[in-house]
Amino acid sequence: MKDLQEQISSKVEEILREKLEDLLKSHSTSDLQLFTSKEAAALLKVDTQVVRRLCKEGLLKSHKVCGQYRITRKDIDQYLNRR
Image (cartoon, rainbow, N blue to C red; front, top):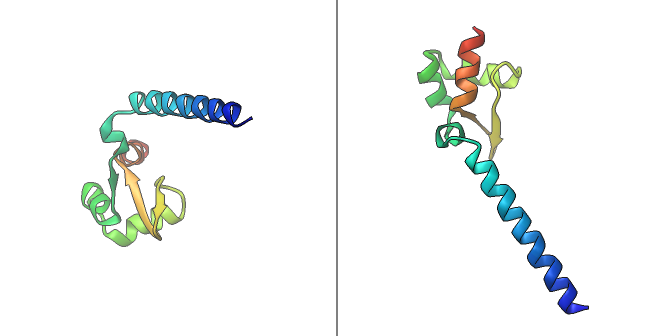
């Protein structure tokens, strides 16, 4: 039984590793870079409060990390293209 559990665990780890590698290969590192509200504001040439409002309203896609917004370069570029 223990041997079977170890085999299953090993196979799951292998599958997860492969999926993670595929995911990382499909995105450029610039897509994965996260900007703070302040950094995004500088790129967008707006005040940080504007960035926070855009994130809160869902107009600028973002991720909350420890209660603070983080925005990818890809999401900033998409927002600029929609404007």
